[in-house]
Length: 442
Image 1 (cartoon, rainbow, N blue to C red):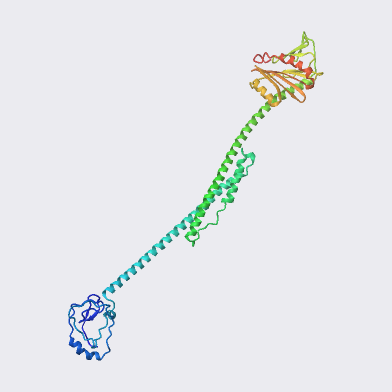
Image 2 (cartoon, rainbow, N blue to C red; image 1 turned 135 degrees about the vertical axis):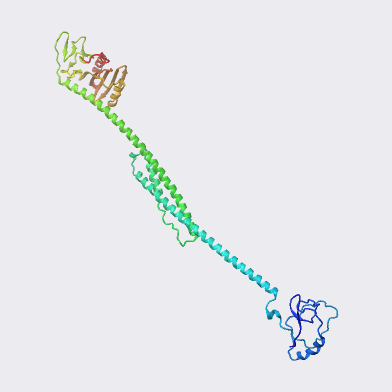
């Protein structure tokens, strides 16, 4: 191929013949292109072209030729055309514009890769942080549940001791029943909370589920334990109230026992006196209008009655003449007993010191505690009480002074009340006690 001179198209950069007026690639006029040597083209190049193959341009012609300047150079198209040199773009790589595009693309790809790597790193770190937080929350929730169970179990164990109390140990036995129900609910619903673990290889969703379960169970367990504790406090309060009531009852029982002992001592003294009186025999001796009986004075019958006067306490009473005196009387001189065997009626008169400052009201209260008193009366310092016991009528009249207590007691069968009632009504009111509120103790 013969050598030729080439130029670069200022528009597309394609190498074209130096004598071309228009770029065959883009149709850009090449105004500055010099006029080629026609002779050389027509003659000198002919022989050279003969030695080579016919030249076929590698670049396709432009789709339409733009207008060209006037008087374009005439080229002999019949003559063989010289082969153009190889395309620099294919021989030497991309042009400057193409290189720039490649560089920009490479930069974009690199930026995308870097952004992706950074995003992946951030995402991975975020996922790891969330997983760590989920595991910490799970561990804390399970540990809280275990600690709460251990603490609640102590309270339940203590409450179970109260569960064993009987109805006699508490003021309200329903509190014990409620405690048993609360403990049963605790064991059935909240007792065993094991089985929740935070596995080291568990995913976040699993850890979140375990956390939720632990917190839910802890809440339920807390409520059940509080119910047990509340029921236990109710039982404690009920037991305390019962203990207080028991203590009060014990005090009252002790006081009642003391009163019974005092009353029994007085009754024993009366019985001893009666026994002595029963063992004595009746005597009668005339001594100037009456008789001296162990220091006491008993007048002769007058108007169907005799007056008995006690030498020691000075009290007196009128006794029907048909009643025989039982002698000897008590050694202490406290009184005498008179009997009517036909009526099976006994009259006993006696006295004692009022060492305890007993009042008529207190004396009547004592009789009512001991006997089923059917009739009673308090008038000033006089106390009257009547009751039935073992088929007998008992009547007591006492004059209660601050120094001494004088009394008359009449006992007779209920079957003889028609005959004995009039004797009682005539005899009992005759009791007098001039020394009850003072005077010498003879």
